[in-house]
Image (cartoon, rainbow, N blue to C red; front, top):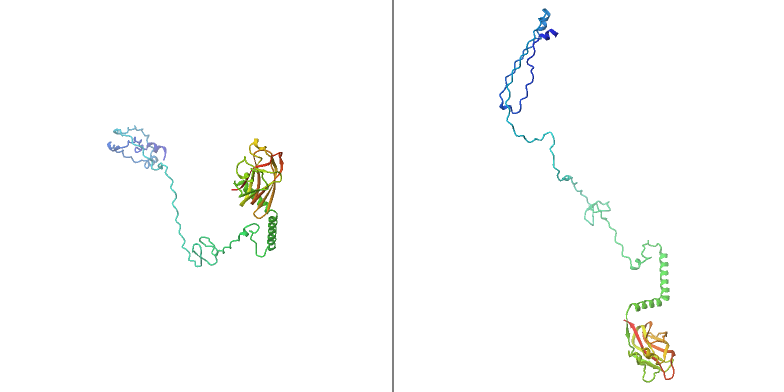
Length: 346
């Protein structure tokens, strides 16, 4: 198409300016006039005329005003609506308590039909080649319980288990050494061990006084018999004629003599103590129930009051005291012994 045909072509009125968009809710306004029909283009005949005769200069046509559109009626003001959520966007979700996943149920295999030795613990049958139960793992053939060891096998070195026939000579040698040690210990340590045991009992236990059934003296001055040494009065005494005099105490039954308390002189009072002569040494002979005699030398201090002598002799039936080392024996004085007390284990 050349420029002359383009200039003579009538303008296309079907292309108009877009009318302003109608507001929503247009049901209340009247419809506008229909648009004008478009004229067909004359481009097909224009080339043919331009070939035969030159076209006349086209007169510009005045632009026709567009028909005025009626003004739409203003809609009544409406209340604002709440914003609607966009269906394309996910809605907010409030936090909730987590839900544990559902357990998966597994198919239980059908129990196998097994025939064999039943388990002694749960009774489940097991194949013959099994040593332990396939259900509870208990031994199918439990070993027989061993016999309990004798008491002497629980003491070292006999508590060690050995195989039959092994180490026999070692056990015999150990037996011989043990027997020999017991014999030696019994020969050398038994008296000392027994005495130590009895002394410990004497110190830990209590004591009580025991009175002899009879008292005899080798001699006594008139008015001061030997029985005054056991009457419990410290102002009465046994008057011996001199050194070498003895006094014997006899008991009704054997007892463990723990202590002997001697009150020397004529009295416990210091003013009366030295009125008579005193013995500073005594020889004590103790006779046991089996006839054995124990001798002990006692040294006494030259002062008024009680003096305790520890003895620790068992099965005592008789005690004899012999006076020695006399002091203060002048003129008409006699050797005075105020009190002798014997104590046994309570």
